Image (cartoon, rainbow, N blue to C red):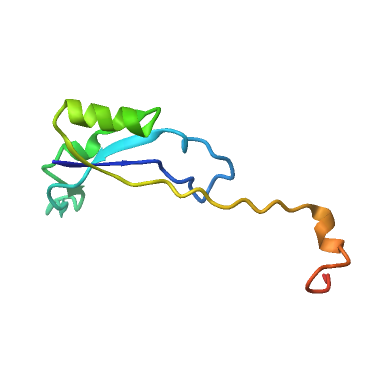
Amino acid sequence: MLARIYRPAKTAMQSGRAKTKEWVLEFEPASARVPDPLMGWTSSQDTNRQVRLEFASKDDAAAYAQKHGIAFQVFEHHEPKLVLKAYADNFAFNRKQPWTH
């Protein structure tokens, strides 16, 4: 039973940083999903895939995993570099390409 500890990235459908500050502990899949022959739905015998725990810090998540004897792997979060832009930059004299419609 191996667990992953990581901070989730923001989804492509949102512009804010909601739900990206918490650290998440999720279990690695132990068995593959198989399609049900009758309905075609995918199912699995692994119920640990449904467990998703959220923690305020990476250390809290690691302490929880150590306390309960769960092997874990920590994935560090990569902060994106912010490029501040203003609408006025479209009309600046030092613009690399001329502004056109």
